[in-house]
Length: 457
Ligand code: UD1
Ligand code: CA
Image (cartoon, rainbow, N blue to C red; front, side, top):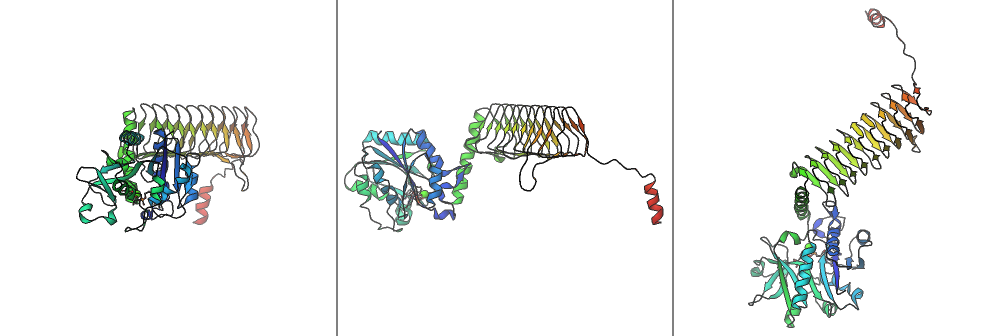
């Protein structure tokens, strides 16, 4: 293995004005840093070192198991950050790819292209550059008369004529590891920010007559560094459009991409239609021929084929083929619905199993419950699952019908084919095939209305 990657991710990201480390801000449901790690993995790089500093513990948690960690106790600049990885690469004689944790749009193919080009020219350093219409904030790439790279000058240190340059440093480089860390240790902080600039290593190498190359990338959006929340929203917008386009090209109809928000890891099957004002988040997987939305909000949910979901919120649940959810249903985490289940108007279901063809059609709460097949839950039926201290289970076997406004005081079991009378508060198990009614006898007082009026009069 002749390639290692160092991801610089120690900066606070002052311009984000945030308590959260910059690289942990999300774009389409994943942290910026995770996209950079994904790209490196996809490019086939197995040795990845992440430099962490500000908010270290949180960043370490995010990286856990995916890369090695090195700490930069004080954020003294990008060169100082890379230098911290030195001890990890002592006996390493290959090339070092440097990435920044704040470029979430980077593609694996761009990295492999840069590496290939770097190796083919035998340069000591290759910088990935791009041309920006508005280069404000970026380091400018200063070229010599022959068109070769002479140095990189930061915005704050640039002379007026250098500020006119539109070719910028993307912050992504490939270096020969031999001598790199020794050179990094010899840089100064003689600049506007008083920091050790990694960019200075370019000029140092050029001065010594070593070969340095700059490779320009055609699509500047891909290497956009995110420094503030306006840029964060721009990255989100760009990535969102890409995610939606990929889905549409793969056979998914999205009626209004402007009002549809789908996270990067979401998978959607062929001929599914996604209607407006819909949010599909986390690692949600949706099957074929579904109709999702309008107004659906799904997080970390697995949906089968031919499912319809309207104006509903579904969290961490499994929905079988042919189910119909909504309008206005809330599935809280931990549900598993069989096939052709119906959860309807204003019903809430939590941590429950619902068997094939069962219906919870109106105004119900079903929590910590097991429902068999062909169960019909009458309007307003409530599982009373909480006694103030503990949660208790309810079991409702195949073919049960609960009358409207049944209260099922858990723990309780309703046997197969049993029926409960409307308005009953069921506190004892109901045997299979029986009817349980719990309500006082209706009293009728004849002529009450007239009596009432004559008394008043
Ligand atoms: C840097 C480059 C600039 C380039 C731009 C591209 C330098 C001096 N400048 O500027 O030429 O155009 O990226 O986006 O390198 N970091 C650390 N430790 C530190 C400082 C920074 O780990 O002490 C990390 C940050 O977390 C970030 C990356 O390095 O992921 C870049 O730092 P940032 O402050 O964003 O640099 P820019 O000013 O954008
Ligand atoms: Ca940056």
